[in-house]
Every structure is written in C-alpha cells, then in structure tokens.
Length: 181
Image 1 (tube, rainbow, N blue to C red):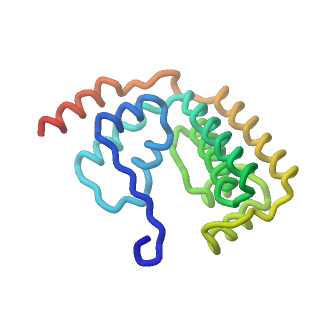
Image 2 (tube, helix red, strand yellow):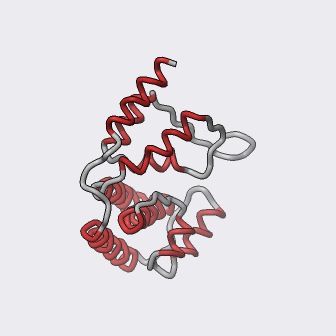
C-alpha cells in the first residue's frame, strides 16, 4: 500500500522478459505497452518498437487460458475482480486478433467490442470497492463469457496476424547489446 493505493510491482530479467514475449505471453506485452509507465528510457522505447514483431494469432491461446483461469476463480469465490479479469482478457484477446494492437483497458474495450450491457455497472462497482462479491445472475454471465470465447475463436480464425514471430533476431541482438552496455 502506498498513499492508500494498492500497488503491484513486477520485475523480470531482460532475457526472461524477452523470452516471455516470444512465447506469446500477453501479460508481458500488456506490461510493456501499458500507458501507465512510471519511468522510461531508450531501451524501453526500443523494446516497444520491437513488440509488433512478436504478435501472432497464437496470442489468442494466452487470453483464452487466462480467461479460463479467472473464470474458475470467479466460480469458486464469486468475487467481482476475477469476473472483470475474465471479461478484460477475452476482450483484449478479441481486440488483438482483430486489430493487431494490445489494448488492456476494460472501459475502452467495453466501448469498442459488443460486450454485455451490464459490464459498465460492474466496472463502476469495482471502482467503488477493491474486493467483494459480484452481484450478477450467474447463468447470464456464464452465457456471455461463453459467447465471448466463441467471438475470440472467430477473431483468431480471421486474424491477419502471422503464425510466427518475426522479431527473434532483433530481440536477441537487443538483449546482447543491452547486457554488454
């Protein structure tokens, strides 16, 4: 907690981070491409410029799996946070498959992709309280999550993203150069 705000800090060795990028890990791409950057530099900007070269249609697997994990957590706990994560990662995956861009902001995504009409209310409830139960009809939410999984499948099938990353050599050179510096 800092000044009344819960903060998460995640760090990685550069080589590990790059390996995760090449393994179709949407989580590290969301970290790298986040608009919420506290400190940046030339290396960060260069890594951002290389990010499009790791995007593939297979990132849909990451988002599908992450959504499944969060959905199981929601089913077990009934809490709002994992439910919103379920929606966010499905919508992020759909957006990525359709546009080739990583967008992880749920309110933005909810306005761009056909999402459940009650989603803005859930987002507002989360803004009011960090933790707590999701006051939603389970069957309806389950239908919507299943529908978004199908939309993600369709978006992956139709995606113009390549099957393989193209930035392997550039990322290797980047890691070597940064470590030598």
